[in-house]
Length: 451
Ligand SMILES: Cc1cc2nc3c(=O)[nH]c(=O)nc-3n(C[C@H](O)[C@H](O)[C@H](O)COP(=O)(O)OP(=O)(O)OC[C@H]3O[C@@H](n4cnc5c(N)ncnc54)[C@H](O)[C@@H]3O)c2cc1C
Image (cartoon, rainbow, N blue to C red; front, side, top):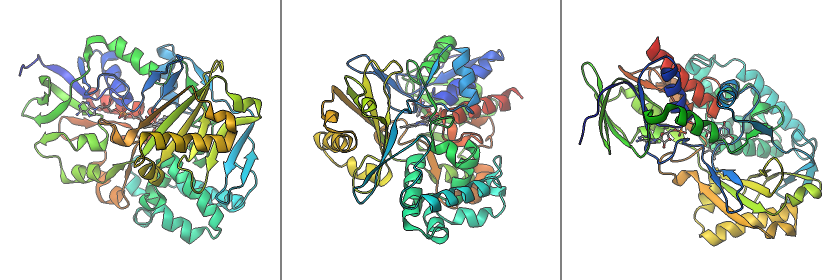
């Protein structure tokens, strides 16, 4: 093993949090080294060209208008955005087999819609009470963190159809089942995004726009700007805080620095050996923050044939299908047609037990049911199950189990431990769980060191 010369700051992970930390430090004239286990940057953002040249985003892809830090990076590095296609009717497959069409913003009528709207308004009202910097100091935090979204919906929403809608919203936004989601975390996440609608909708909300060249493009350009400061294929195994420095052991040798920023998602952090042992609160917060389960499947067609039939390509399904939600992911010029399907939570856990052919058949069958026989004529098909991703271990992000915020967050969420600082979207107060949150967390951790 060789020891390289010491740098001021080592950043672990070259996702958006790591790249934002490194860029902030680099801009301030601080020497920084980013150690990334994977052979590419971007982390949970992964853009890949398909056989016909269409670039798909296997991971995060959308940007919303209030995701200001991500917009700023895209502007600085010259990556343009385009609007998500929303023309035509969105479709909803209800559990009794009925298919309904509706307009731009959510279903306007249908079973349980009114009670659903009332419930989300109550959630927004409660979310306004959340303390974003210290969620455990939110009024009534203990009761909220002791209750799951499932029990809250059972207790406060009488209409079973509205409860089905709320459950689908939870699965789609958090990639967990309502039984696994603490109400405090639900409210924190809503507040961190702005309101419930921000999380759910496209136009002017989190799913508003996409990136030319894919959402990895800004990350690639930041990495190119940082040059040799980013080391790919370098997995961090151990982090040792010594008297006057931090020693980082990787599978490519040892590095030393004055400070380290870890941007690792919780399950990746739990695989690294830290000495001295991390404080109990940190260990427990990490162990009890569990990655969601999600796969994204892209299916390519010659044209976006559904548009000609008056459909937007957006569809949600209740009941048996394993695909929960579908969007039009065609390129901006519609040179080809692309549908993206999300399979998450219980549905993912079932779908991933099928063989490759059966998984594909399940997806195509749902597309045919929603958009017609033309959906059989797929030119290409590609899937990425993030729960099996070696580095992320799931997605979109980690959800602290009920009780975790109040038991361990004060010292375990993102407080520095000596010379060790914590970033990553899971540590963000604004747009937690999103790329924008990852960037903000990286900038905050860099500021801790510069400050
Ligand atoms: C399917 C999916 C869809 C999503 N959709 C959206 C969306 O549309 N919009 C949005 O804003 N967000 C979306 N997200 C969430 C978004 O991708 C994340 O919030 C964000 O990318 C997290 O960035 P990060 O830097 O915090 O973590 P990561 O991107 O996970 O970065 C951590 C890095 O650490 C590396 N690493 C792991 N272990 C080690 C080790 N031992 N040593 C060195 N390096 C290591 C990893 O390879 C990775 O590069 C989605 C996520 C998924 C999975």
